[in-house]
Length: 62
Image (cartoon, rainbow, N blue to C red; front, side, top):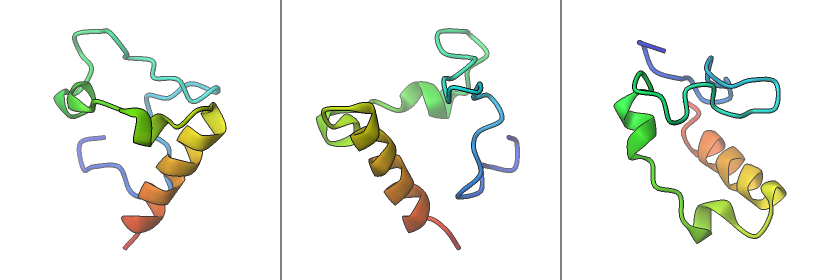
């Protein structure tokens, strides 16, 4: 997404299960590769991780 990813819009590189199609590939954008998720971001379940990401999206919505 050369112009950036707007809040609330899934990345174009996510598949139907919201998994990155470029993970581990050399063409993966440097920004994505630099993201180092930790316990705060991931929580203890997929639901907690998705809630954290939703909060980030809401916080960056113009």
